[in-house]
Image (tube, rainbow, N blue to C red; front, side, top):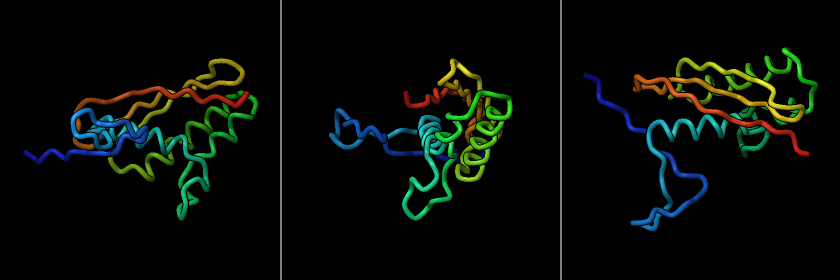
Length: 128
């Protein structure tokens, strides 16, 4: 039986761990979901020394809603996650408009080393 790999990331809200008073951590699936969420919400040139990482979704939020726009958002998410998050396999993305300024994105993925598929939602909203 292969050894299970444990994933650990910092909680980017920098919440304090109640016992150790250190920065809290996220483990396993929660850590991977946090990483995917950060990748999706990162714009090109947001990360110093890595301008290629990002999705440019903020720019797409100002386009008129169409199947093409939803497809571009979907493809950008799949591309950035499959390229920069090796802990994720079998990613599927559904993009639906909530209203004229908002998209509801549901991401289905499988974390490497896990049997259960995971899904979570993001709300992409244009600045008002």
